[in-house]
Image 1: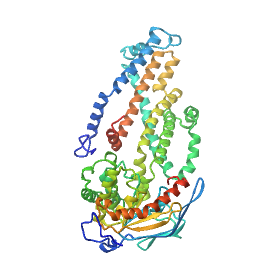
Image 2 (image 1 turned 120 degrees about the horizontal axis):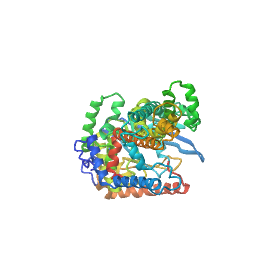
Image 3 (image 1 turned 60 degrees about the horizontal axis):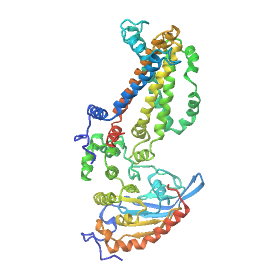
Image 4 (image 1 turned 60 degrees about the vertical axis):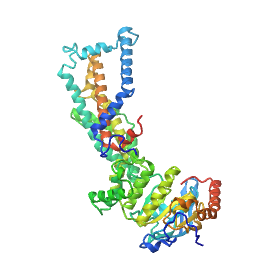
Length: 292
Length: 295
């Protein structure tokens, strides 16, 4: 029997044990080494193009060496490095906005998507409106956002929330629609009311898609945030990138960009971990399936 | 009519009508049922003027080629969709009929699905305990206790805390049957539950099902396209015509229960197979020529 393969003699696998198991398997797989090779190739190419050969068009691009030196410099030339409190202020402001936007878009998008998928009537009268609004790019909302929300912070959060909301709602709706018809039927047979079906079948059944949506949503939040910050606000990584451009501090632009990349990567990893935690059944299924 | 050669039957009990040894509950009366639905190609008469009496406590096997409309019949009894004519009764009470085309799904008629419908996000134990908790009959703790007992009885004690995705498909099917029985249903509606299993697992499942049946004595409405399975398990076998679906021939299987796999080699079993195989084959050819898609 599949039982016992993960030492589940008591049936329960702790999250930590699961993490260790997966981590050790990850170390034994080629994944981490390929990842390192990927980064080395990327930074190597950048370094060669911009600093060694100074290839046309790359000549004015700061090289990785230059960026790293500035980034780790206790006395940065342009006043922005890991040693200056200002840097953390920018990161924190952006992070805070993304957290707000992510929480709001999840709190609105998941229920909205669940109802879209679950109730045909609800879908028929809201989905066309939703689909009309969705293609409008975040940047097109900027003037309205500034007019509507008169503070510094809210327009940026509004713009960031918008794109995330679409991703979350749409994926949640697809998640509900992906649920095999026999699950709600089985629940009805077993005496579940419509509300119980929603609670015990629709929500958990849509969860894998919801978490895919949340991962997209967190990524989308970062890129709409940077766009929004370029237009409004006086802090944040997007603001930093834009103001460095105005001040011709190209190295700082790259510090800002890499910072967005790293924080963005970490935030979607966090969402993925939360997803695995909430969907132990899926993690265990995949683990037994022999993995990727 | 009754054959003296009754392989596999160590008890002298004859093929008695099932009503004798347990309370008569779970009799289904299907009366002139029609089901017309509109597919992309136009109207399809899936079931037409179909009448069938299923006795309380019997195993009634419904045999027909894929797509003949037998699942439509099951869905009507279960309350998954409406009928367009006739009526269906459970123990004399109308489930659906002229004024009420769609039955209400409920725990008195639990379906075991063709591809399995254990909730993958709940452990096997939580799945089994699901029904009574939803109905508010038991607290989660009481339900878990009862579920544990029933799973142990069915030899499923080891997989209680596993998720369905972690155990074999045969195991999953057994858990699903136990989940149905937790509700003390009058009727079990089985829609080709063993179709996806390999033949060896299938034979194990047949005996497991019979064992469960002998302990619980519910009416079993079992859809299959496998004649051998039908004769091995059933008190009666209804061979259905292909679309529209209605009984073409009803076979009384006079091999006494309890049965085991020895029955398969008995002369009476062979006789019954021979008696019916041509009828089934005829319908299969018809279905094949009509090129019906599976429903």
